[in-house]
Length: 220
Image 1 (cartoon, rainbow, N blue to C red):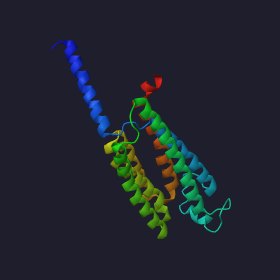
Image 2: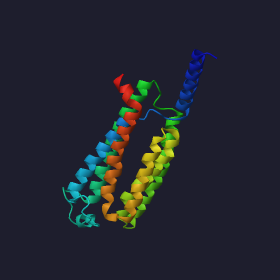
Image 3: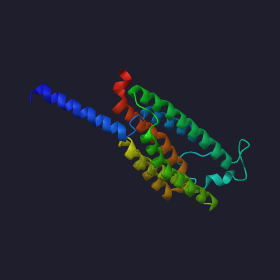
Image 4: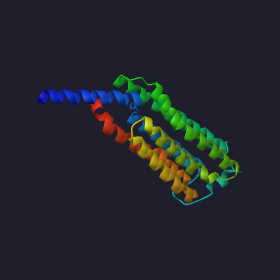
């Protein structure tokens, strides 16, 4: 076999591998979607710290109890949490859809196919279970466990969904789970860990993914 034939065989194998990967994994996730989600989370966290009148890492554990009978800005802290969380989620998801759709178009891939639905289903199952846990914690008065629980179940969702996406997603999920477990032992730092997990880790992960997979495409 000549050198040219060997190179042709390698190219053919790479093409086959690429087609198989596209058919079983959603590989159009954009690193910029992670960065944008992290930025949205940081903005939301900054507003939350300001609303609560809380200094990061000050160690005040049950800081939210001060606002139960003393609401700020005309809304109580529960209404604020729901409103702020919804705005952050909507903004982050919108940015993720925009950047991921753009990435898929650049690669000439479909954004909605069977693999996409599998990824979303595997992500949604732990998130829905986590939502039930958070509601139960709230109803039982264990409000300090809500922030760590969101990190743990979100991380489980990422690990579960990584089977249908880039394997790097699994490591982000494991870090989110680790932060959530730490938060279970340090209740007073739930918002800080939430900021790190949903904010800084998303930005770091997004930049890493952009550098690893998209930098060359961006130059082109």
